[in-house]
Image (cartoon, rainbow, N blue to C red):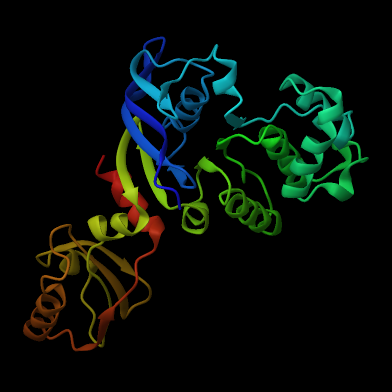
Length: 311
């Protein structure tokens, strides 16, 4: 992977009327990297993508692309960016070729060069067999591929995808993730998503947004390290009630599976600091007859909830 920095944002902010859309966000994206923007509804993911695309301008801070300050009026810069909005502007009465030809001309390509651009985009997005199909007759998964094809017609350095997998069935979602991985070979990509699996599958970098702020930024593995706590499966022959388990020092949360089985989550700062020994000692003293205790893997969804919950 090329270590050249393609995109930087330095302390950018943007206000919608009296509502803060993005607050003091910074990022850096290198050539060939994929950054995933994760967060709840209204967190600022779409606003950040619009800022990076030059659709709206930051009211504070700066954005640079290939070392130059991003200027929405700079045609050369705009040709370096491919942007897929949350609601792709597809013309449903057109065929796939008609729509892509129209988009190519909007990008400024002459008629004689449009054919090669269409061939490139259709091949990358697996659309060759749909060339003469009317868009409204196609599935949502194929429509999303058409929208992405439109965003890469001009072979941009940077691709910005706003919820590319939204509403797709599992089969099309898998295909979409594979497409993003393939595009990452030649492009730098920023995607916004609600799906942690998208980030696990496609991204090297992760930014979690909440209320317009970046509450986590870095490698996915670092998220795991920073927020993971001890998580234990336990089984008692004479089980206590939930109140007693929650009162054990270092316990953050308890889930009950049946009368005898529980999952116990440790508090931040207590990971790997002996919660299992504390539980075993407490169970022995209280006569709960502990039959089983072992570590249990935590889901990324739980880690995400913990990050949002702490911010």
